Image: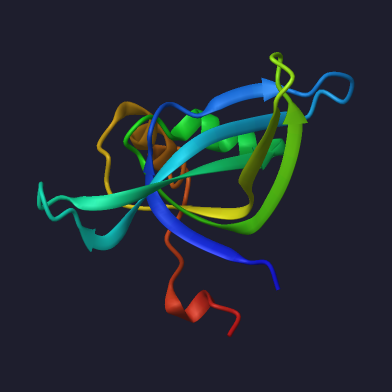
Length: 133
């Protein structure tokens, strides 16, 4: 089974591109995930930096609402690969392909506020007697 659950912060703004030919949205970002180990010299927690990739509408949503420092929780799977660099050396990659994500924390930035305010503007309360169950 290949399943990954991570929670962390984006190390820089999510990068949105569109695949040549298909036009599919592809978002890439690096996620800083804190370890439960402190550095002996500094007393700060160590972190792992995980490369993540998302596709389609999900990729567009992540690019729109997440910036450097934003918290996100993701579920996905690991994919490894390799390519030949311009200098002729072989490079190896390890990425998490995102299957689902959730907003975590409270960033109080403009984009998150816009996201939250897009819901409920025209909602009408429903009385308990009107519930179908």
